Length: 228
Image (cartoon, rainbow, N blue to C red; front, side, top):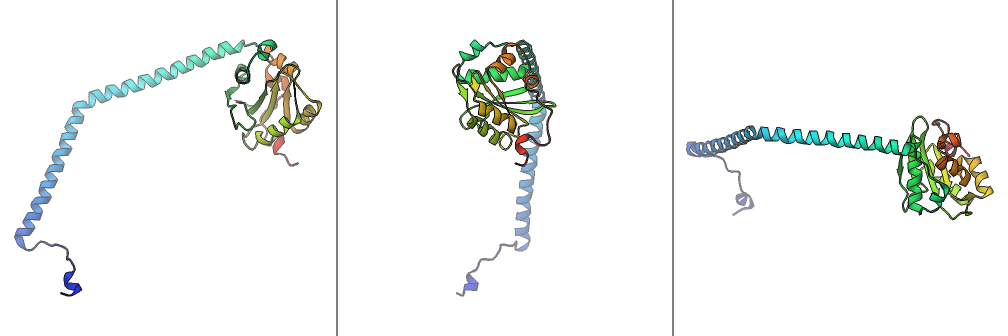
């Protein structure tokens, strides 16, 4: 037998009997599919009140959650509107508590703020947004009373505020103090600082941070994006 003779050929109906058999198979499949579709439509028609009720329950639940969240935000806003934190209270906090306190103070001042500080936070513990001031990054440095923050912190914040966080303003806050070089370097390069005295005016006396520091409205080119 030659290779050509071993090749399989596609089956084709031969004669009237084969054609009628193929047509019967196709007809049977068509009828079966039509019956299955009819049953699905029938079941859907029977179940639509339950489906409509389930959809209504989901919609009411979503609306209720949104109303609850709105009321909670308003309650938080009223609570934080009169927030005052003394220096001894701030001194007694741990690092995480201090960061949450700074977040709450920003919220009190009208910022939408979030605590983001964690390992690998790229020199950002709190990030806030407020129109038309733009985006602010806060680096918290909780220290013992009398402790000082050096210039290296200012370098780090300047290097990440714009590229990593797209910030318009960068602020380093401590319950201690800054070295003279750190303050001078920050003033020169647009990294603002809040030492113990400024922190008292912000947290305890109720002065808004953007007013205390004189933060301008959003700039097209923040200080750290300018050419050196």
